[in-house]
Amino acid sequence: MEFASNVVADLQMRTDKPPFNDPRVRQALSLAIDRRRIIDDAFEGVGNVNRPLPAALSEWALPVAQLGEGSRYYQYDPAEARRLLAAAGYPKGFPVSVCFATYGSTLLVDIMQMVLKNLKDVGLDAKLDQREYGAYVATCRLGKYESMGFGPAAPFLEPDNALFAPHAPNEPRNRSHVTDAVLTDLIVRQRRTFDVAKRRELMHEIQRYLARQQYYVHMPSQTYTAVWDGALKNYAPNLGFDYGGRLVAAWLDR
Image (cartoon, rainbow, N blue to C red; front, side, top):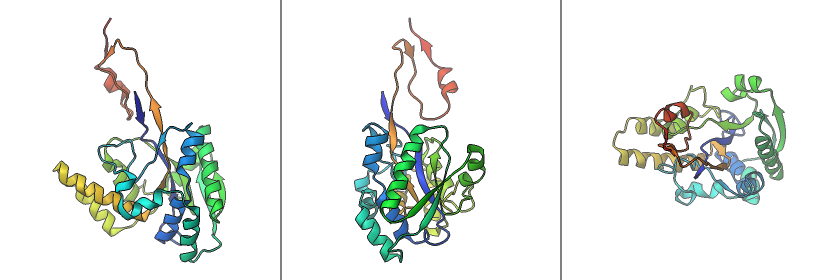
């Protein structure tokens, strides 16, 4: 079975202060990222473009084409990125540091190198602030960094996990320091909506809003391949961490 990974790496920004409090700057950063190149070079041509919700959450995640005005920010367009930066008052770019930990992954290092190049190509003087994992988790993972951070988010199966904690004020996982009353209201409302169809409408509205705001610039993710013996019954790949609970109900039919 092949299936999309819901572990998504993203660029986080100090949206509580200039220059990242200007949506044109955030939109420019998203336009600067060559997602197709990341998929081709890092994932050997097989991967998924993530939007405000991970592509793996296919029951909830809108395709890029359905994100309205915000859909254009998922295209690679460095010329438009430079135009937006100039319109925001940064025609020559600006210096940034990107807090980063390798997680012991050469793949993540490869992606980070490509992201740094993309940022430099649109005029940002991007410097890597690499930290030991423990130091990274104690600081940048909690939003304690100078200007930008980069790293993966843990896998989740419920879309609220990918929306509330990264965007709600005062949440530890709100690494981009988002404070947006309109967004907070939408996210709280979807939490309180039990009708699935109505909740899905709110989810779609949230995704279109986030596509315009670009509080986080999401990177592509891998496509996983799972293989198991045909005699293993009641088993399937699991995107979460609960392999133990799943395997309690699995058996061999031989």
